[in-house]
Amino acid sequence: MTTRRKFLKGVGAGAGALLIPPTIAKAGRRGARMPGGGGGGGGGGGTTAPVFELPLNIPPELQPVSSSASHDLYVISQENAALEIIPGTTTDILGYQGMTPGPTLRVDANRRTIVRQVNNTSNTHTTTHLHGGHMDPHFDGHPIDLIAPGEFKNYDYSNKQVPATLWYHDHTMDLTGDQVYAGLAGFYLIEDDFERSLGLPNGEYEVPLVVQDRTFAADGSLIYSDNFQGMGDFGNTILVNGTPYPRFEVANRKYRFRILNGSNARFYNFTLSNGGRFIIIGTDGGLLDAPVAVNALNMAPAERYDVIIDFSNVPVGQSVTMNNTGGGGMGGGGGGGGNTFDIIRFDVAREEIDGSIVPQTLRPIERLNPADSVITRRWTFDRRGGRNTPWTINGRPYDPEFVAAMVKLGTTEIWDLVNMTGMFHPIHIHDIQFQILDINGRTPPPELSGWKDTFQLPPGGRVRVIGRYDDYVSDPNDVSTSYMMHCHILEHEDHAMMVNWMVVE
Ligand code: C2O
Ligand code: CU
Ligand code: CU
Image (tube, rainbow, N blue to C red; front, side, top):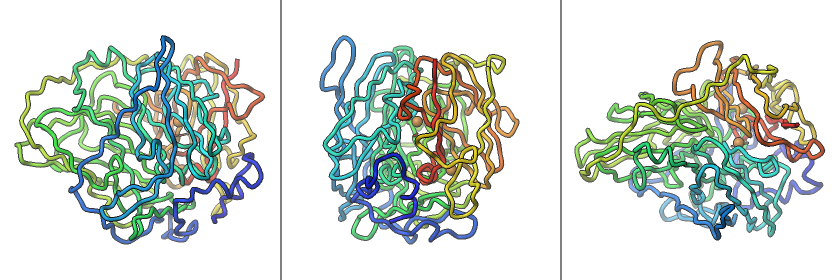
């Protein structure tokens, strides 16, 4: 049992013990594996997973159980399951539909969906957040808006937003790290006719890829290290769509990959072994206005990059690997040991005519104007109590009863995010998509100039973002209708680097 239990509030007496997922062995008490300065965690040692042998899993797309003129109804069962992830072993997971990642939902912008999340787990509470989604806060998956085993909740999403690569994942108070690590995460893709008309690679040539690091015991069970003092949990084995170090057969043509860093704490710097470039077409909140070609993708937990990789210059029979040349927790030490360099290998297996294009202009982005901002709110991210204390925002560890800001509906605000610590924190804000005004005073590079909901806040640094808070309001008398802001290193989030805020009339 870890000391973070004492931060659990508002979930009801005794709930803490019930909330521990039964499937996850706890290894390494907090701080136990923290080489000076942070980082560490994970089980250490090598990984036994085969590299570039197993075929890439592509999560199935979930079909609605019913459709009407007004909406589509999807039903997802959250279950304990036992999967063969490392060949010859069995891993107990928590999965949407018993799989990890969960099934992909592909929906149309402005068409309402109701997603019924049924908690069929044996003994843990859950709440589901649609990360990057813009919705009524009653359906935002607040950490104390919990579903008990045997119960369900209908999450009602309007999908009234710019189409984008979203993901849904668990958000349970104090246990988000545990339960996402155990498997509760999946893709939610919003599209529209405009995007479909652009001629981008689609169908089997459009593939979501979630990259996650995990540590497995010899018997295949997951080992979770709740290292909240350092950079969080680090695994020694890379999974892409739940497959360790997969290989994926491609044709010699362009592919669209929607890449999500779904890791609890690990940052990545992805490169291609042939020196090829990633053509970024979109970020967290949707398409860029024009593609941006880069040599490396630097991704913090929860960030998404929608990219084109062109294999047309790779001879059939040859391969391209995607590698991670990053240090794990950027600026805070990496860790976990094992093999976190190899990610996925693309084997060019056949020739095909490529009818797709990457247009020079994608989706025009409405630029928010700082002159329209009615207030600048400053948020400081810190650990005021020093070592062995929770992380804080504006001096406070997360208190589910405390609402830090009341934003007026329909207004534009600048949020000034200030990092008082010596490590990176990927700060995520719910409800809307933002534009970055500056990072340490400088204009962001083009790939960070589109719609974003997760921001890499550099050590000792500062990021200013602007957003317009349209459409939905919280109930001022019900804290569970707050929106959240938090660090997306899930061990930091669970150890209190989170805050409630509301939109009000
Ligand atoms: Cu992806 Cu509040 O989380
Ligand atoms: Cu979110
Ligand atoms: Cu953090």
